[in-house]
Image 1: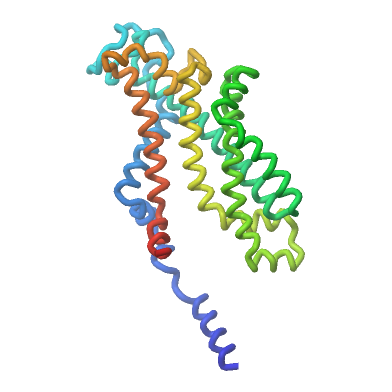
Image 2 (image 1 turned 180 degrees about the horizontal axis):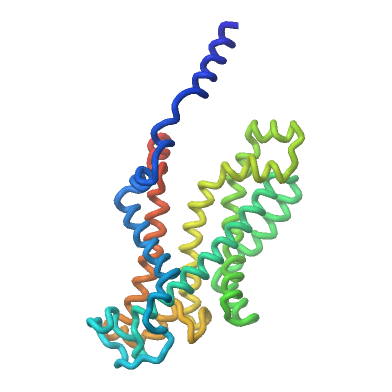
Length: 301
């Protein structure tokens, strides 16, 4: 009896205890948790997101219009990033290209991670045969090289923005599924999930209320990494001439179109390559410095 009373008092005290300072933290404390490198990555990422969302409306002219300047001009006061092979302003091209590079990659990543996570939740919460069918079916996609699959899809159905989104999503669904399933299976074996099943909760409840909240954090980090993979895949397709088609252009196609300036070190070929590099590095910096991750790693040691 004494032990039971002590446990009850301890539980009540824990419920009435003040919320830890970290949970009361405001946005500034949350941002401080990123550290210097994380804040740098977050700033670069926000810059490119704003450029993709607002940049085209802030431009005084369309980047797709034929340029009136000399081709491959160097950086100057008139053209901050030089001109391309048609004499168009590279700054305007980079800003307009951000819409396609970031927009298409983000849509494909959300579709891939969302589909993979839903299938993983279904596999973990359902019976063995559903898990086996889904796992073996997606393993067949994993066996196909990503660029080969993309080339087959583009050759068969043509290159358009919807087709690029669907192709990239299909390629990265298996990876998202394997990650989410490995997390969901472990959560599914815990006691509170067993209790939920015992009291008669259905599969959908188990998926959305018991498993999903506990794998959301790792899956958001995985979404960031998958976004980087999709950006690089789409850039490589555009460099081969199979991605975004003219007159539209993303950063990969800008590198391909201005490859003639490489011999002279022209800004028109270096700048879009640096834009791709800065975006991918920024996303990785944000993921590596997510608030709370360093504390969890210290606790694990």
